[in-house]
Length: 129
Image (cartoon, rainbow, N blue to C red; front, side):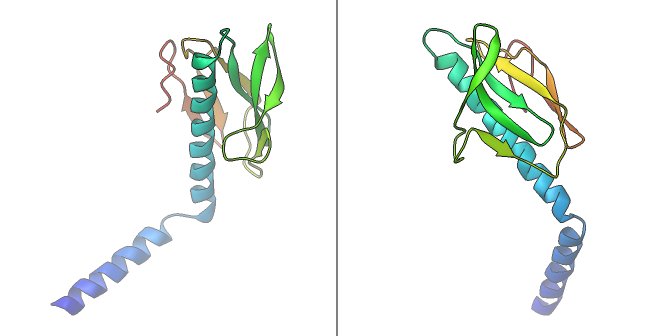
């Protein structure tokens, strides 16, 4: 009886591991990291005094945390748990876009295309699923 359970567990583990590639796992990890950094930018925008827009400027192979000084996102700032203001995600490709959050946490752009996936940011609420 125990031997049957052990064999079933081994077969299940092989099936689960065999169905996910390293590239898929790396993509999901980068998507989750980007979502976390978007939430951080949103947090900064909601807590900055005087109210200032914060956001993430996404390039084709990296992104940067930016603060909006009067209509032009500039001045990169260090990302949390990073040693610089820029996070490199190559070889994953992304659409070039800058998403800024206002003092209410609302984004100016509704989505980011990242590695073939679309990260949706809910208008008005700023919810990032």
